[in-house]
Image (tube, rainbow over the protein chains, first blue to last red):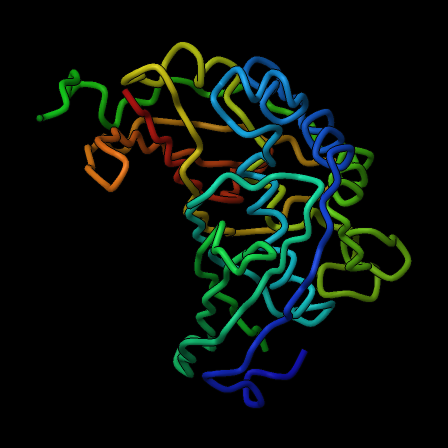
Length: 139
Length: 148
């Protein structure tokens, strides 16, 4: 990643293209020990009974994937993701490709932070998850 | 329509969990499930040279902690269907393998909103994560949407 001095408003992060499989979604639910109510994340039929089109990705997993765009950008530098805000607009379905984008909207020299708009979209360019992130560049 | 709830719910801490030990294996499985490859989260040798001197969990790992009962007993429900609507997270300090994390939660806010698809009631639960040294690791506002 570039230093705080080198980044600019308007710089983009990514895009990060990911294929999220149903097995990956189930592995996430299993790793997190999701119990009651996890059927919608692990089983198509259980999800349909709830009126969904099929299995969906847990909201927390979407947050993890969107965060990954920012932490990949940070790499192993001495910067830190201090805030992440996400809104889940449309259920994210597995076995599809999603693309995660970022765009620097502000840069504050006083506290050496950058504000970033982030979003996840599907192949139809529909925004599934939107949010903002703040990264602090430590000296 | 104004949403009805007991105002005493707001700000009342309804559960503080027993400490949960963060196991290195769980961080590994979390990274695998997300396709996380950043070596500061996945490679002990590389992480030694990184900013934390050891492996830490990706920041988003913070949102995976749960109050054991809170979703099913203490969070007020409005309507039949509930969904995770989003999160606002402040990542204060990295979570490390071996940390013992406690989670304290309260109802921060309840509000109603009418959108294209009808009326929804939002319940915001604020959780604060601390480690064994009483250091705050994260503040998380969980937004749950209830649809009649």
